[in-house]
Length: 168
Ligand code: PNS
Image (tube, rainbow, N blue to C red; front, side, top):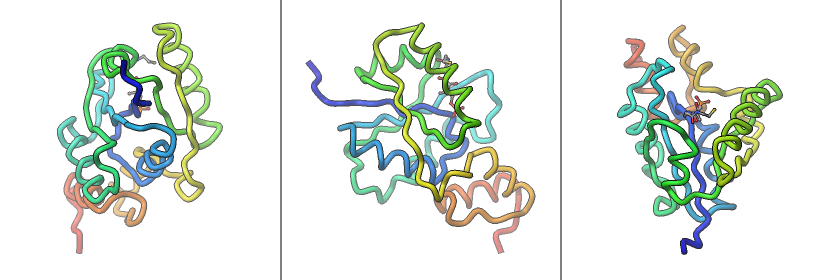
């Protein structure tokens, strides 16, 4: 029997932000192992390819203090099936504001309908990241703004390359 407490932190991560990393560190206080699972979601049109998103997560975790407790992976199809294959007990998601609630509530209940096995666990990001989302980060960089301190360095660099913005 696997007695490790494993959770799957699922999302699009398009791209990963400091808010995601904050949540990861909070979850490491509760779980033994965390699998960051990037969805290969054909319904969404991400800015970054799956490989780019995985690479950016790995680059952002390069100096992490507990690398042996974190795995970075991707999945296709239903999240609950992936969670079961991983032997995880929970799906981890972040909650920022009330506006997140409706979507998250719907997703958690649908996942519960699909499988009784994993519980969905919500953690609050730190207050300093509460207004950050991958979407707003992309919008700011595309419009020529800086997001230094809100995303890992590798992410800001890649965003500027993607939008062909001079880094000077
Ligand atoms: O970061 P996101 O885009 O809000 O993450 C959403 C994600 C990837 C967790 C969700 O779309 C998902 O689980 N996709 C896999 C397909 C699935 O299982 N759908 C049913 C759950 S609603």
